[in-house]
Length: 329
Image 1: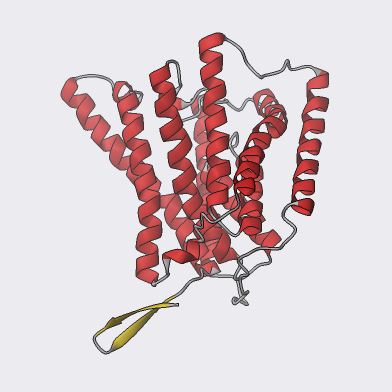
Image 2: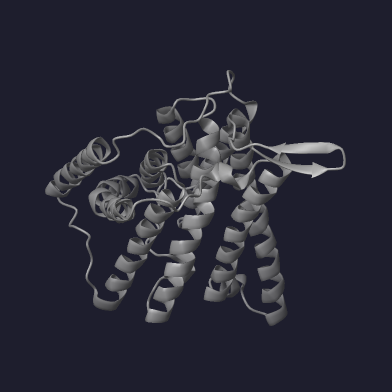
């Protein structure tokens, strides 16, 4: 516990988050980007009027997307820092620990690679189902689709590094550890992953973020460090960007034909992937979490229910808009 004297008072800093913190931070993480998006839209509209062009010319530009991505990262970091400052919670509560064995770092990279190759076809099968029922799918990487080496580097930075840092601070840093004060580790991992999935506000991006969120929550508890999920998150995004770049430059794709055997392959790879995860957990992560978290809450915070309700409402609204507009925003 750290303390800071001020006059005759001593303010104690907590080294743990609670489920109340999880609910409040999740709600802020849902609403703050919406407010920022409205602000960006207003600025883009003003610029478009000044230049006498359609607003889409501004919002589809690479500069607009880079600015928005940078501000999103800064927003997520600011949410954590300001919340910690307001609630007098130590930065150490995030467990941002780089002191891991080099073998663990290599294993985390391998888990990130496996998460893409072992699960992408299963997600592809779900995408095929969404396509059948008429849900419009997104097939690009927005304003940073890597069609050149320059865009590829930018995409790695703004789609790979930035989200891995900002989103992990929120979801596996604050939210996961806060939920552990009320629930056991399995429930905390599942709930934090569900929040992570809902945050994407898209039916297409619901299942994979949930699965990946469970994987990242698992490794955070096993390694005792938030750095582990940041690494896996980055590797995942890096590979997505790299695959898109390779396909744009060469036409080569890891995609498989939509045949009956595709679904068998998808299920087999999915099962094998989680079999490998089980082996890793059993024979490498032999210990339990390095960061035991006392379950101090006996009643679930009202903010958990409120934030979940808001998240689901936003997901439904975004899905309706996507379906009615015929494209993913």
